[in-house]
Length: 192
Image 1 (cartoon, rainbow, N blue to C red):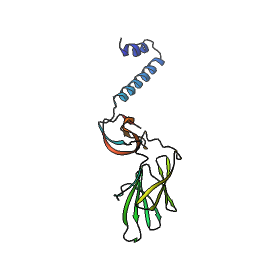
Image 2: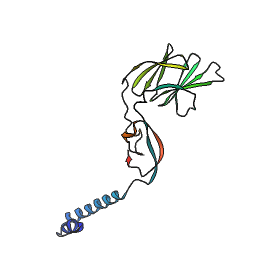
Image 3: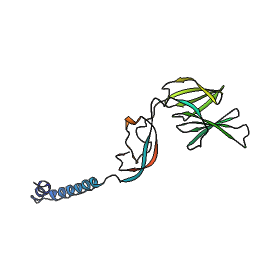
């Protein structure tokens, strides 16, 4: 038996005003349902891809060579130095003894870094959900003085921080999601 035989014909069997209205409403709803089912995700669309990190390496803190500022954040001045956050990745260190000619000294890698404060040659920053205290008195040699674990509330990285966007679904086997990057996606399966 066809759908039309089940829904439409019984509605027209009686000659009352209610049945034609019910039939028209049913047909309208079915039309909306069928057109909604036809829609699918575009084959190529700008969306977001998760950035993964190995949970074991997220806690690693190290000093390395200076690098280009890509996603710069807050700037903190201390003594003859300037420290600039590279959002989510670490801190750029610059010598400001000659303000007209700043000199890039290095980059302190701290995953999840977004804040900084310095007092008595100890740099305080967030490292994912932990507060870390780094001795910078002998810079470029640095050392982790202490770590207070899970002091900051966790922010869910399981979905992009934007609404109405397509994204590559998270694959937990790739590691912990530490951020998102905008890319061209082919046949995305997830949307927020």
